[in-house]
Image 1 (cartoon, rainbow, N blue to C red):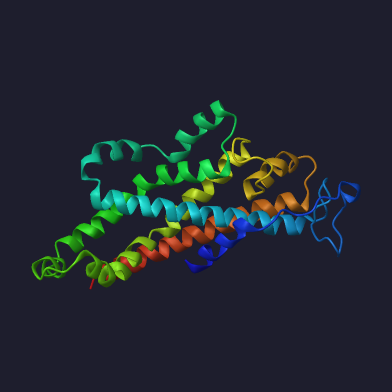
Image 2 (image 1 turned 120 degrees about the horizontal axis):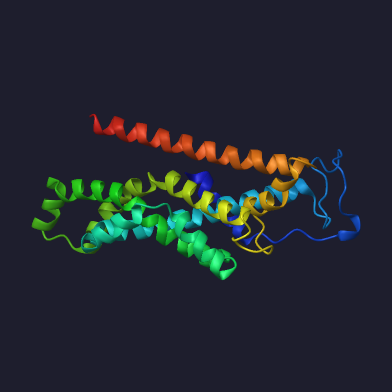
Length: 245
């Protein structure tokens, strides 16, 4: 989990300098993936785009988990609406909106993805919180008259552990949402370089004029998806193991 959160710093990284007069260079020892049309080293661009996409997904996942925690704790009255939202994947809401508006900027997309992912994360969080609410420890807290501040200090680490256990799932949903919209040309504009934007530029060329950057971007996206899926599976296995004790 920590490696995903470390990439939040990548959101503040500056763009690569442009040098169109020395662009469109083939791969070489100095530039292993070549140089794009605007004079940017393709390997540096791939690393920057990957770091920004991971950072964006981490920020979106944290926002979604925070909203899901609020819904799980206080959202009983909205169970019907949340069930309806969970019946469809978030991308199906984002695609028509992005098509109508001509694209969604990075800040708006982060907020929208967080709002759409939260209902999908709410059921497992609610299950864990209900188990806690019915435990003797919670009853003792209320019986002994513990203040909200003292209860928060005592149980915040446990709540953080329960919430962050869902981070890989939320992170993967945010990564795919941003990559899908950007690949379709409906995500953040050219000012927000990301893996999805690289795929938008490179995927049409893979069949006719493939570049090392295109294959590398596709491989990196698949590697990130695999790592997130593996982390989700490991987390589910760990949770089942705890439940068996």
